[in-house]
Image (cartoon, rainbow, N blue to C red; front, side, top):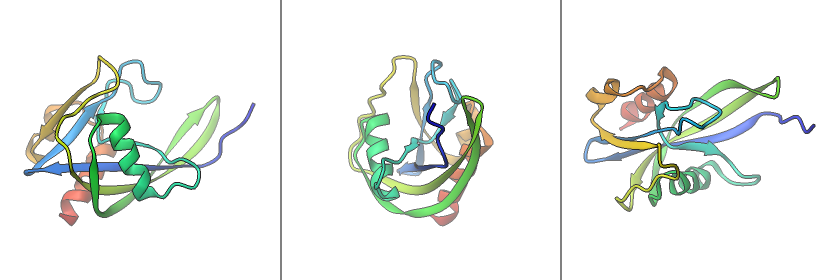
Amino acid sequence: MDIPGDKRLAAAVVMHEGRVLLVRRSRTERFLPGVWGVPCGKLEPGESPADGVLRELKEETGLLGEVVRKVGESSFLSEYHGHEIKNWQDNFLVRPLSRHVTLPEPDQAHDWLTPDRLHTVDIDEYNLDIVRQALTSF
């Protein structure tokens, strides 16, 4: 079995007219099923975090975006077939260049929430911290 090493990820805090885009993960996801958060995903080999965050945004929401700036970094541990993996994540503030959100799974949902309404969905502290990083630098 190929044991993965550290993973690099990038997350997009998409802001439009004072609202943040949050997406609910599919209930079939292995990692954090049904949890709300910002669009995020693994970088491809050789891909820059800024390019990766825009690719992931397009794959996960159908939106085109433009990186405004990097707002911070995060890390977390996950498990893959009994092996602990360290995940390193670059977080970006992103301006949407399109508006129509298209989600890949039918049981997913999305919402544009003002910062004071983020608590109205099942968002974890990790994703809240990513949004706070972006709002602090906004």
